[in-house]
Length: 170
Image (cartoon, rainbow, N blue to C red):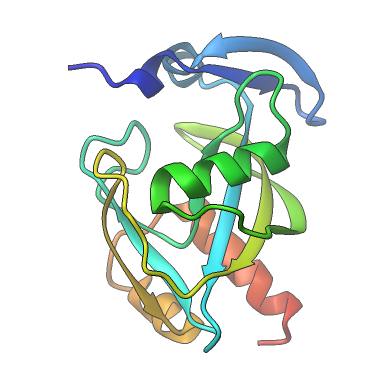
């Protein structure tokens, strides 16, 4: 079975993050094209981060823990619009205030992405999107980083969390 996300038209960018094309998601993955994504780190009022477990059938980093909600930016979509759309799709959060923190390039064998990182404040409850999110929980940033030493995590997410912790002086 092929998910609808397989056919999403994704914004393709060059190494400087300038739009150059639009391709279906499956072609972007097959050709390992540089694309845009939004990452939203969701904190509660106690400063804990919402950690989510990705489903086993995700096209990249299946069954890994992820520090952020988010996903690919669609062709013609802004990072900000993508962040609001992804929060609603994945966690059921509407009318969130997403604060941009920084843009970051990440590359590994199967993923080349320009990400815009946002934070938002939300205490839940969440409505998890069954196709993408297996489970989730709030943990302190230190607990998340410790778990990252023994459990499989999205590598781009851990890079972002370490950078945010550095910005906070942690």
